[in-house]
Each structure stands twice: as structure tokens, then as C-alpha cells.
Length: 151
Image (tube, rainbow, N blue to C red):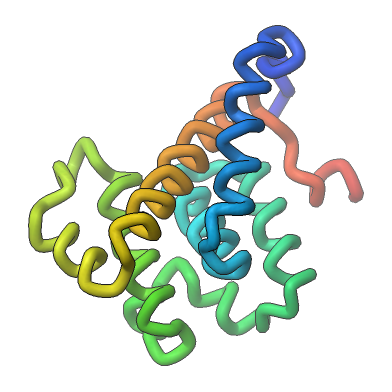
């Protein structure tokens, strides 16, 4: 895998916009662990090695157990490891990330809206959309995960 362009170095104004949204998400009130779990799940769905590596490391630093991280890809089967709010966030993350397939059905929205306030659900949707955009940069530009650069 060879690295391609460094998009944000070549388009610094675009980076400022993404950085502003990232800063918003960090201060919007969603719990940090939930944010990172969603970031990791979205990255797993999109197949971004760089982001999977980064968010796994971030969650480990937060003290999240390896069992929970290992089973995130099959969270529905390991539901007992995740809170009601985490399960709702992960379900909504899957619906929004796979938007071309799911078309975000009313039933999925209603399940998320039953657990999150309107503001939280708006913020969660911003988070999912931002992570999907970052994944597209990571995959298309072949960003190397830290695990490869540390080896």
C-alpha cells in the first residue's frame, strides 16, 4: 500500500472546515467514549485501516476493555457489553453509514429518537457523517495506520 496525496496539506481551507466540525463534535455533549465507539464502528464499516487503528488506540487509552473492542463489529451479538445508548448509537451509525443501502428508514430513526434527544441525534448524525468523510480520505489516499509506521 503506497500513500497518495496529503489532501489536507494541499487543501488547507477544506481542512479548517473539517477541523471545525471535529471541534464541534468534541464539545457537543456526547460522551467521549460513545463518540469513539461510533468513530470506530463507522471506520470498520468503511474499511479505513488508518481510522480503525487510531480509534482503537484512543479507546484503549480511555480504558475500554479489549473484549468490548474485539466484539464491536458484532455488537448486536455482544449486546450485553454495550449500554442502551451505545447500542442505539451503533445502530444509527450503521444505518447512516450504509445510507445508499438503507435509505435511513423511519423505523431506524424512531429507534434512535427514542433514546437520544433531538440535539443528541443531530450531533450523532454529524459525527457519523464526519467520520465517514474522514474514512473516505483515509482509504482513497492510502493513509498508513500507526501500527505500520511503528513496526
